[in-house]
Length: 190
Image (cartoon, rainbow, N blue to C red):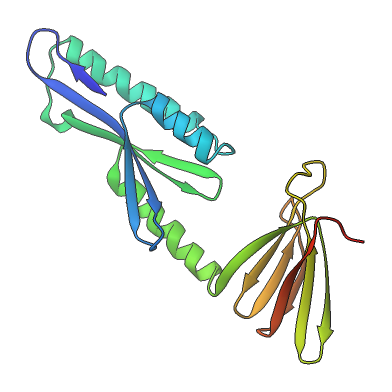
């Protein structure tokens, strides 16, 4: 958003800069010119993330810049201003201070890498079964993406373990093995 001064050529540029990890695992950014375009993006990409904090910070900072512009107070420190943000789990962290966001991102990504060392993928499931077959572990799961009336569990796979997680985050089972096989058995368990 460009905030122009009423009686001069001066202006403030105010944007939201969103940080995320790209496919290669590098930190990337996207910029949004106003809160409406950012909210539209978030509703599509992350509808479960609460935007109250960033909306409040954005409105407060915008008001401050507009007051400065209306009063003819140009401060070079505000010529390019950002609200920086990134998602940590289901929480959107935001700040007008770049160092704060860098610190929070480093803390989050380092912690996530340690917690998820060896992580492969997650399978959504409505039901599952598992059994030992020889020296291998077989896991079968059932899932119907069109059934929203049934709780969805998560089967997290790692190089050396499989974790079965309930919809509310409660862990049901952990199988510690590197020799396992996971198979989709269909929509409904017979």
